[in-house]
Amino acid sequence: MTEGVQVAALCGVSLALIALAVWIAMRVHGTPEKRERKRRLSVHRQGRLGDAMISEATDETLYYFYTVRGVHYTASQDVASLREYLPAEPHRLIGVAGMKYSSKNPANSILVCEEWSGLRAPAVKEEAARTELPRNGIKDQLADADHCK
Image 1 (cartoon, rainbow, N blue to C red):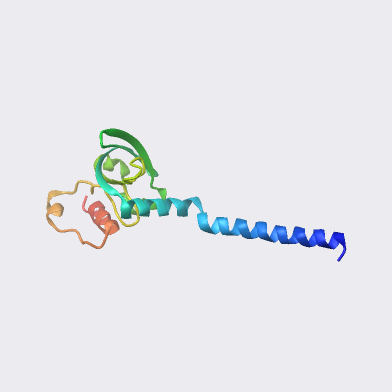
Image 2: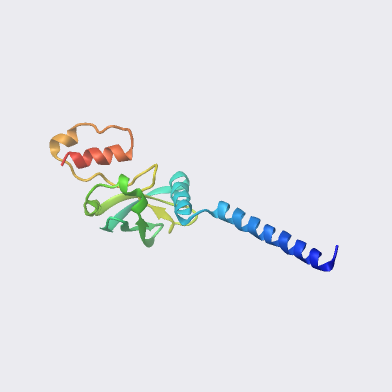
C-alpha cells in the first residue's frame, strides 16, 4: 500500500470511531427531557418525604420553598411535561404540599412526577368530599376533584 492509501484508511477508521463515540454518548445521556424524567423518578424512588410551601404556580412551573435539617431551600419545578397530573387552575395549588428530596443532595427535590404527587387536591364541595375518590392514580383523583367543583 502506498502512503496516501494508508493515510486515507486511517482517516476513515478515525472518522468511524468518532461517529461511534458520538452515537454512544447520545444514547447514554439522551435528550434533556429523558434526563429530567430519570431525575424525577430517581428522587421519587430513593428520596425522602418532606413538606413544602408552594408560593407561585403557573401553567408550566411550580415555585416552592422548604426546610431540610435547618437549611432553607427555594426551588422550582418545570411541570410542562406533567400537565395532565395538574388541575386545570394551577393557582389553586398555592399552599402546603408534600415533596420528595434526595438525601444526598437536599436541593434536588420534586413536587410531582409520573408515579407520585405531593400536591394537595384542590378544595371540593362538602358533599363531594364525603365520597371516596378512586385509587386508580393521581391523574384520576385530580380529574375527579376538578369535576366536583
